[in-house]
Length: 288
Length: 352
Image: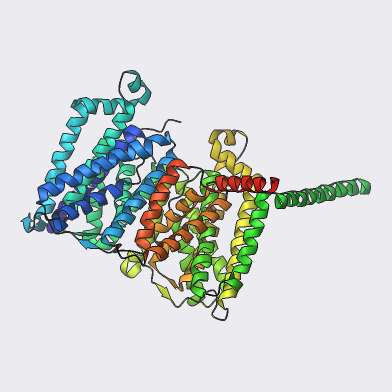
């Protein structure tokens, strides 16, 4: 009994940590720019595949591969805002469709280059160890530690740094921020860059050691969406808590029942939340 | 008393005949207009095609396949263009309609027409189950909420013992019919669906839907039951998506997880982006344009030596670039500009 409980907790924390990394950037972009980025999952994919290209096809050392793939994803994030989202003039549906078109392009490009079937990514840190009697891969332990570091530094960045303060100002009132001399559009570009960075880190920490395929991007997008809906769109604290709630409930279903059913957990949670409390746990009440 | 009744009756019949007359006159004007002529020409072309095109593979992939998806795209446009609910979960209806049609035809041995209708009806039920929670959401949230539903339906296939099973050996409409007959059956279904949707959006009902799309509060203030109309529109859209799903499964002769594939939710968005939103005919045209361009690109690139992964992926890479540029620069689709330009060309040619 205690063994099952510990494994539920450990796997729950691991799943929750990946959800945090995936959805943090998503909620930031929504909270600041009111942009729902359909290409979020595609950013995840492109980072993973570029990492694979640099490390396993061009045989560069992995730190170089990490840096380059992250930089490319950040550039893609910035270009997405400057070239595609900004000219849409806050037409939400048009933004949805144009980012969808981008996601479709990235998915098809990856299919074209690497094929549509599963591709195995060799792990960065191989091996596994015992934590409280549960066998866990090293890479997953590293993932949890890295998530904690990233979340804490992200919070400090948002609270203390100059850009972070501007981001908060824009998220509170875009026009007032512009009046006090903040270039709001540029700040939104920064949030897309940060979002690309965070989801890229998630890809690099999570994908090596497993297999992935181009259509997985939509799954990543749905996970991010599930977390953000539960936590409340635009709430960073809500996102972190919701990520761990979903992670732990997924490992609960997985350990007690079967992991194939666990994939349905986030979807069902979202449905329940949408029916009972559409604004999520910590979301602001919608102003009508 | 009797005179009074007669008077009322004659009044009603008069207004009724007037209505019919005005409809006929309207139809006549529409036929004489440029768009009407174009429609008639393309319809005649679609009728002639199976006698001209002898290659059955081309007939299937260049005409039957786009016709099936034209219904699907038009059903999506009813929801997105006229109610303003951009659904990202339409694959759920395609899947439910398709899977149940296949189930009725293969396992219960029901006539294909009834099976198709049942598929559509169950698709409506799914639509209502989705609509009631999803309509609490607005705009982008609605899109993402429906996307989740699409994923849930897709996941049902990977549930192990309690999941759905694949159905093989589905006949293409019916084993006794040859391909030309099947072509005409699908053509009739497509034309009927498009005409129905077209008349629907031009009617008072369509006007009410548009008022909901443009201004929720205004529509409510003028006494329109927003929730009711949205749900009815959702059900109609789901019905036609289910019908196209049934035809799609007939086309593939097999019903499996692929019919629920979430990618199909994005097809109508692509087709509508090409053809133009809120037109019904635009998405149908966009379907043909996109699928033909895809086939042509596949044919062109399959012989080239310097492209390794030729065929579908390369075609889709090219088309997705075109799609991004289109959404970015021609946000109203290409139907209207193309028709306008064609009309100008015709005017110039005839003026000489």
